Image (tube, protein in one colour):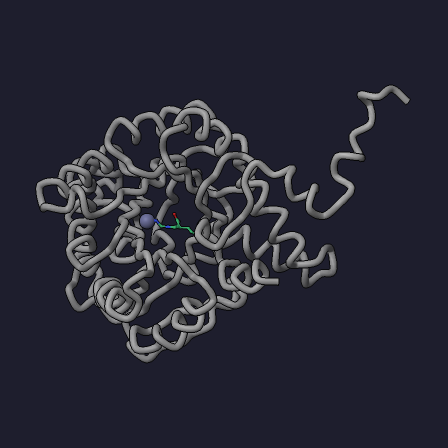
Length: 328
Ligand code: PBG
Ligand code: ZN
């Protein structure tokens, strides 16, 4: 055989196999999405999202404490308000006694070293379940949407969030949020992570069950990107960088690895996040339960594909399991 055709000598040992990675998964790269509901004592399993639950604020210590001991570094909070009056502008989103604001304050005081990100969106809080404010004809009214989302983001920053992450996909919201953070005195205290390339995916189903955020009419196609839209994703990433995003995100992750690789090239000087969304997680778990593959092996393979594509940060429902697996 020709000398240059022999590669197997380079990866014959577990250690030399590990050197083939440009970067390896570490605990600090994982951000754990958690659902906070407004019954303070709630612990409710989410059947379509196996192993995940809605938590009340009083349960957070029992839930998060053991994970922090195992090396959990960051969480992203999603509010699930069940006992509130929803309206057209999502008024309960920044209720000072709402679940997200109470959870931010609780987690900050319990775990001073834990990095707290908060998803910012209106869909959990609007009567119509859409992510922005609507015109009378049901179409999106962009400017008041961005203004309202900025107001909510600032209130989370004031409550102590280290990072606000708008997932609504309204035009102009990154600029509006950055402006509100700066004017509110949080320009240097709060990170802005943009769900920049968020696609209208079939993989959000379990999340919408969990968060009770399915739209009451229509769909989200007039604000989330078409799955075919590589060019639009690239433009959204560049726009959000120009509008002041500190972190760029691609979502979902596995069917969009090409977009992650594009984002890594377009935004080489920003941290790059991806979200292995609820349906991706459920798919990996379901395949393992059906005997298609070993769960742990597949969780690593999918996550490592995202790192290989260029991510530096992964929002993952597998985070608690990785905290164990990365110790073994
Ligand atoms: C809502 C939101 C969604 C997710 C995060 N924020 C759902 C949607 O856009 O319909 C999905 C996360 C997941 O599926 O895990 N703005
Ligand atoms: Zn939304």
